[in-house]
Amino acid sequence: MTIDRPGEVTDELLAALARLLPQLAPGREPPTRRDVTEIVDGQTLLVARDDGGAIVGTLTLVRYRAPSGLRARIEDVIVDAAARGHGIGEALTREAMRLAADARVRTVELTSAPARESANRLYRRLGFEQRATNVYVWRPL
Image 1 (cartoon, helix red, strand yellow):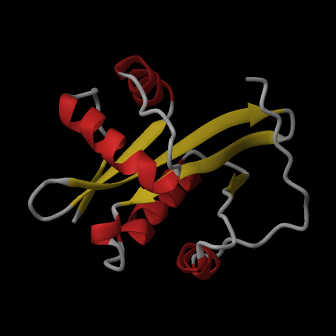
Image 2: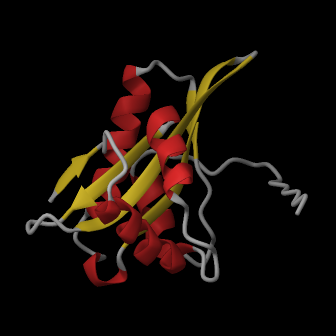
């Protein structure tokens, strides 16, 4: 397995995201080429490839500056159901943590649904702490 950061949007990347996204968010429309280009150009998209070179996982690291300092969020960690249990989510997350540390962010946040028990165990094992806070969402559409 390898973890890399695509430098351009390819048909292979678009197809992989269209295949993987429903495993995280059923019913969600796959991102367009323009959407993925915006991510690749403005954020950090990581992909995990199996030994045959197929994309089997993705993670997006979002960095942003707030008055309190440089921060980061890990979003949309997706590992193909057929490839789970082989350390892919851990490898993606560790690489995101390394990149965030290299960028000298103050904190890296992520959310994970309580039902995703193995993901929650992984994040705790990697040193993430559950925050005593409420998470709110507003959907303007």
